[in-house]
Length: 421
Image (cartoon, rainbow, N blue to C red; front, side):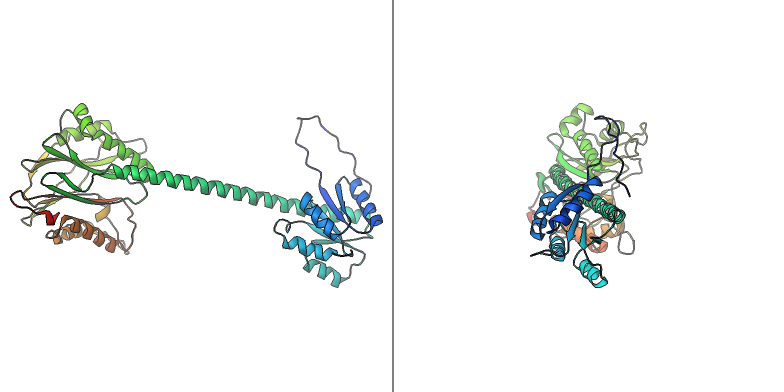
């Protein structure tokens, strides 16, 4: 077989980029054999590096990372199979393509060479055609291995980058979750004669069910609980936006009063249904601190419950659409009288819709019964035990939906009831 025809070159910047010339390391202590084989390989168009023994060959492999290594079997000191073993033992070199060159091709010798790390054999007496065929085959294998290595390295880099981004995202989510949680009220005494405690557990790092208890003017508390449809970052950001609207200073500008019906009507106008179908449900209340009279309005949210000290219970909700479903909807305020030691609970539907292992929901009736059962205990104990009972029903720690449970107790002003808070 004759030598390959010279390749036509193209001007720089024209046509596909030229592939690099394959590099072959030839390791042979016999100078005549080495020079002859090197000349043959060079005439085939390859770049050839030469080494005079096994030790020098290992050094050259580490320095040049050739595409193919052709090793003489018989060499002083470290012979060809020993070099193969050293290559396979080195994680940086083990994927190298190695051909053992020998004057003998007995089956037992071939078996030993393969078992010690050789990929193929080449007889010193091989014809030009055989040399070309075996070298081409070995270089194809080497190219495939190198491509696999590059793909692996790319995947490793991508994985490291993804892990770093994931860590960064988790850190940002934790910061965002801390910010959202900081928007919630501090448990304790939001106003004289009012005790408060709450539990909050979003289904993800960020939740879209938020609530607040804060002064609305000098003689009233504003109360609300909202639920942004969906979960995660988008729902939480939308929920914080609605919380900003419900701030005392903003309500005075946007609504002009603290009437719950007027507030919900304005919220309905400002927070329409999104193009993706996302919406809010909202319960808003105003508690007069002097008379303990509660006025409230709701837009699709049924999460308010009063357990009176007399033993009666009632849900504070009315049939209504969520915010933004109908811009022409009107929402009216409703009033109810609270008495000393009555408890008002604001809650998300995530707590009573907690499923058991069989899929049965905990339900409003069980939630109500649990809160009533613990009415004689402190408010903190009532909230804590109700959450524990919900977890027990769920049979796990993570609710499928955001869970919020807030309790307020009207304290008896004629006596002290610090122990109940």
